[in-house]
Image (cartoon, rainbow, N blue to C red; front, top):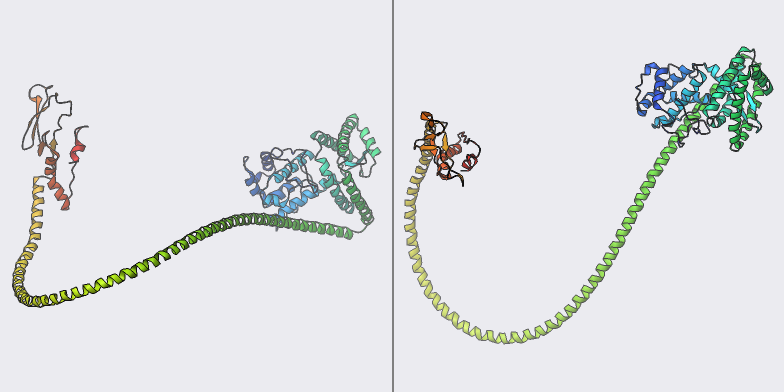
Length: 574
């Protein structure tokens, strides 16, 4: 899988998530095929999604296995290391050691797989470009021991890789740190080269590497003139390839010279520091093995500190992300509260306006009522005067009526005395009537007792009657077949009927003019035959005993059958 050479990188060698590299730059299918070839035990499906690939890579074990397969010894594969972020950090540290672009830990943890796929694609392209497996020492030699070519613009750029075999370990460690700065800054430039310049540089580097391995000693300290003589001694083809590669690189560097001024200044500072340290380390290179071990331990300590710094940076990034999310949440809450405040304020203003309008209306109504009350007061005063004069006249009338009533009361008292005498005579008559009523009630009680006994006997007689009635129905037959002859419909009165005879006991004779002799008449026997003139009431009278049996708790089934249009539904409505 090829990674686009125009892919933009951040200054620390990581992929910039805001650049334009999309699914076109990284083919997930190609990455899966490469992983299956490299690690057959994975057996990843070719159509696996990014989420499924992330599930394989999230613990970091597969990433470490990839590096161990491609470059044995580059990653420490300790048996006591637990899968998780620690393995991913080892992989990222190894990518930094190789100065290859990488992703950040938060990308794979948050499911942002595009930088991860780009990183794997770069790793695949790099090792396919270098021709397969190589050891950690070979890789680091090829990485750090790069001959320099001085350009007219004063820009130093790596042309090809050269391999050396007799390095001092102390110098090697310091050069690796020196070149890590150079390569990280150079990666911004190198990744913008076209595929043609990369292929030419690789071809030239490969041939120079083969030539350098045939010589004794190291070519790391050769001057530019010596390198050119060496290239001329190996033929015209090599010179042509190198010349073309240098022309492409010079063209690329010249187009970016303006943008690299600040980067060159930073390079000079880093190179000055690194050269001073190289001189110190060269003096210490002749020291004992213990000093080398100290330097290696210091290097290990630096790696540990680097991992701690990366972890701290990751935590800070996570904390920053959390703070951003909290800020977004608080902004949303603030906007919501502001919106609610505006709504409440508007509602309050509308309520105040409504109250003012109601107050004005109430004031107008009160003034109107006050005027009405003043009018009513004036009217009531007039009414009081009228009532006083009316009451005086009425008092006089009542005095005259009092005399009349007194004479009437005297007359009534006399009539009351007469009524008292009449009531005494009525009392005697009522007592006499009560005695006659008591005798009649006793006689009625005797009669009523006889009726109660008769009613008790009635229920038993009624149950016996019902039992006998149902027995009669059973004796008539559990299955009864009735036949009802449908009359002609309107417009069919001219047709001839096939019914010859209807008997009272259920006989029915049907004639068939199409058959001669005895077969022309057929006799049928039913429980009863309803003639065409039979009404619904007549049909119901024959089914009424069955309905009564249903009310008595017996199971009864009534159904009608016949050809379409023969009147089944009409008959059942009876």
